[in-house]
Image (cartoon, rainbow, N blue to C red; front, side, top):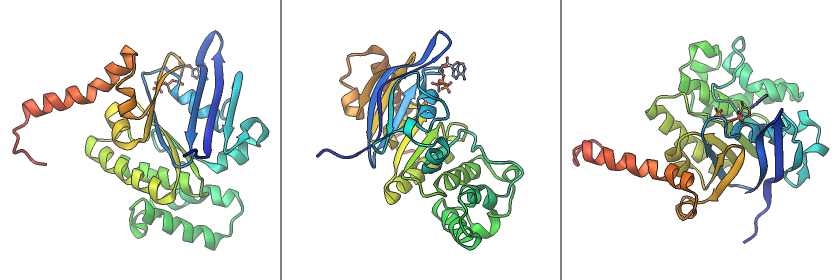
Length: 260
Ligand SMILES: Nc1ncnc2c1ncn2[C@@H]1O[C@H](COP(=O)(O)OP(=O)(O)OP(=O)(O)O)[C@@H](O)[C@H]1O
């Protein structure tokens, strides 16, 4: 069944000097989809994300968001429509948790009472206890808590699209796993479209509906994990084989009756 597109990259190119950081990329992301972008360092993942909300401008091709060419949309208005979660949370260090979360609604001129209610709702949504967290500064939070606040802030203006740049990369594996699962549940519950960059193919397979693989600015392959496993590209197959190799090694090293 054809679904509406949340984002469509059409032959998009972005150069920095002689380097094509994003090189002729065409990719459609349907509304409600969870897409992971996987690729090595410098493969163009962040550049592609930043082209989506006009943090940078394409040199060639077209980026469409919800049916509109982003060039025809005011960049500030566009950014308020699209949530963005940074690797390190990207929180303002001098603002409390509540003020960090409420900053976009405040800039949009929403009444203070509505913003306070929204902050409570968002803290609950990302499973942080409001009473003990809302007045803290980011420095008084763990990495996982900071990322939860980062997600709450990205959702504050009720975006339908959320872009995430390695949101869970700096966390310990257990927190990372828990946060990934929690975010996936939020994505479903709120009917979001999510584009998440990750270095980790296992995370991509576990969380995303579809995976896009980038290398040297090019989109090498895209599809469900099952579709990617029939790719003819060696790099894609190598990336996909990593989780399986890890499972094999773990199974060999851990006793079968070990903790679940
Ligand atoms: N503002 C910039 N000026 C010059 N070169 C840039 C700029 N931004 C990115 N690049 C270059 O473009 C290429 C792609 O960078 P990008 O940040 O998109 O990669 P990435 O896949 O997100 O990498 P990582 O996983 O390390 O974050 C890299 O070679 C990078 O050095």
